[in-house]
Amino acid sequence: MSILKQLMHKCRRKSPWLFHLNTGSCNGCDIELVTCLSPRYDVEQLGIHLEGSPRHADILCITGPVTRNTLEAVKTVYSQVCEPKAVVALGSCPASCNVFAGSPVIEGPLSKHIPVDVYVPGCPPHPDAIINGIARAAEILASRGVPEKAKGEPQK
Amino acid sequence: MSFRIPIGPYHPALEEPYKLELVCDGETVRDAVMHVGFNFRGIEYLAERRNYLQGITLVERVCGICSNVHSLSFCQSVEQLNGATPPERALYIRVILAELERLHSHFLWSGVAAKLIGFKTVFMTCFTLREKVMDALSAISGNRVNYGMNRIGGVNRDIADPQAVLNILGEMEHGITSAIIPIFLEDRTVASRCKGVGILTNAQAKAMGAVGPLARASGVPQDIRKAAPYAAYERFEFNVPVETDGDVRARLVVHALEMIESCRILRQALSTLPEGPFHTTPPTAARFKVPAGTAISRVEAPRGEVVYQITSNGTETPERVRVRTPTFMNMATVRFTVLGQELGDSPLIQASCDPCYSCTDR
Image (cartoon, rainbow over all chains, first blue to last red; front, top):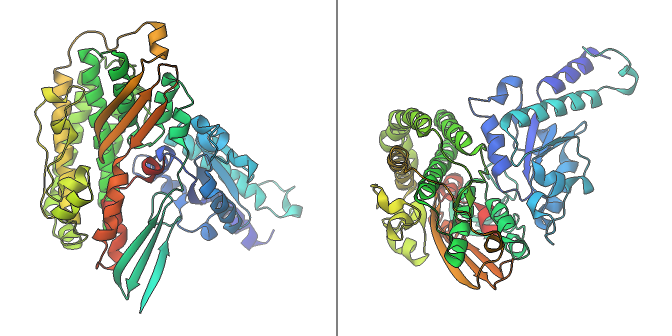
C-alpha cells in the first residue's frame, strides 16, 4: 500500500462522517442521534461528524420504517454516498417496521431496498448503543477501503 | 426577477423530511409553499385494526418527542368510554411525566433555535441540561424516549423516590435560571438576531387557529392546562406566560418562561404526591371491550393542543381514531411569517413555530 492509501485507510476508520436520513421515523431515534453530538456523549471527540451532504459522507445512518414517499430518496441518497460506504440502521423501524408493520404505505424493512451493515436495535436505541453501532460500521468501512492485494497484510 | 428555491425534503437545515419552496425576490421571501407527507405511516389506519392495548403502544410512536402526550390523550379518551377512573396518585404521575416531557421538548427547541441563530454554545448548554431531564425520565420510566407509562386506568410504574427527582429538578432549575433565561431574555446578540423577525400578528394567530407557545407569543392566552384542566392540573398553581410581540424573540421568551413554570408544577407535584395505588385494574373483559360511543380528549402538548377522538362500536378494536396535532394548525402560519423576510432568516422562522411533521403526517 502506498503511504497515501495507508493514510486514507487509517482516516476512514478514525473519522467516519455520517449522513442522517429520516425515512418517516417518529423522531425518537433522530433526537437520540442528535444527543450523541451533545456534551455528555460528544461523538466528535471520536472523530465522528454529522455531515449535511451524502456526497461527503462515509456512513449512512437510516432511521424510520421507509415510507412510500421516502423510498426513492433512500435509493438516491444511497447511490450518492461515495464508495466505500457503510449503512447503519438505527432503531427497530428500519429493521422490522416495528409497530408500523402491516401498514399499506410502509415499504420497509430497509434491507429489501439497500444492503444494511449494522443494525442498532431499540425503540429508540440508547446513545451508547448508537455510538457502538457507528464504531462497528467504521471498522467495516475501513476493511472495505483496503485494496484487494493488501488485504492479507495485518492492519495497523 | 423572482425565483424559486426548493429546500428539502433532505436538507441540513431541516430536522425532518418535508419540502419548503420559497419564492424569492433577491434576498426577500415573497411566498412559501410547503409539501408534507414524507412521514405518513398510516397510524390512524393501523389504530383501527388493533385493540386498545396495542393502540397505546402504537400512538406513542406518533411522535418521539411528545410520545407521552399521545398515549395520555388516547388513554383519557378510552377512560371516558369505559369509566376506568385513574386514582389520584396516577393523575399526579401523569402530570409529572407530561411536565418533564415539556421540559425536554422545550430544551430541544431552544437548542435547535440557538443553533439556527448561530449561537452554538447555547445549543450545547441546552443539550447538557436536557440530559438531566432525560435522567429523570429514565429513572422514572426506564426509557429515555418512549416511556410506556400510561395505561387505561392509571400509569404503569410508580415514582418510588420523588426526592431523587426533586434533586435533579433543583440542578435543572439552576441551569435554566442561570444560563437559559439571561441569554434568551436579556442577551443583546440574541435580541438583535430575533427581534422583529418572523412576526405573526395576534389577528393572524387567531385567524389560523394557532396553538401552543406560538399562539401565546402572539398574545393569545390559550392553554388547555388552564382552559380545560385534565389529570391533576387544577390542583397546581402556575402561570401561562404570554407575550404580545409575535416575533421569534417573543417565542424564545415564552419557551424560556414556560420551562420555569414547568419546574414549578413539578416541584408542587413531587412534594405533594398522594399515597395510594397508581392504577385501577378493570376486569379482564372490560380492558379489551370498550362500550360503544365517542369520546374526545384534549391535552396540552409541548407544542400546543392535541385532540384525540375515539369512536368505539363495542368491540375490541376502535371504529375510528382521529388525531389532531398542534403542528397541523401551526404549519400554516409559516407562509405568513416568512413573508417579506430575509431568505437567511427563513430556517429560523420556520423552526420557531416548533414544527413536528411526524406528528402531522402520522
